[in-house]
Length: 209
Image (cartoon, rainbow, N blue to C red):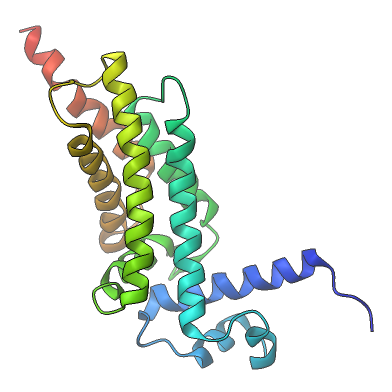
């Protein structure tokens, strides 16, 4: 029997993850069965179960992957000296993640925003997923706090407000932007960039009057 290459194994795993993500984004976690996933990816049960033991493992793998991409993007920025301005940082990281998952669609629209909202909902009743999301949120929060502290050191952001407060606000902007896309359709990341930039310039505009 010919040996299957690692590239083939990785591609098959990718196919399964993307197909499952489409199903979960379309119908939610509870309404999606493994039969739905098998139909979406057009593979046999044996082929899928070779990689994942069931729906719970698929959900965990998808959530870990998305959280990892978000965490890596902001941790990379936290290591920069100084980090990119908030408007560019938010838009570039989100834009990169959306572009990476751009080929995974539901009804012609990116599946990622809808999938993210489904994950948030599922964490309210799934303790394992809630712990996973909490760990990811904490890691992103730490990265953002370091970023804000770098902004404060550079004089970009005021130092009289705790860095953690501004970090949570920046994260809320990113989460809200994804929620808007899930509810109202795709929007370019430049909208978030321009909005954050304009809001940050309010104090400067007021000072010049």
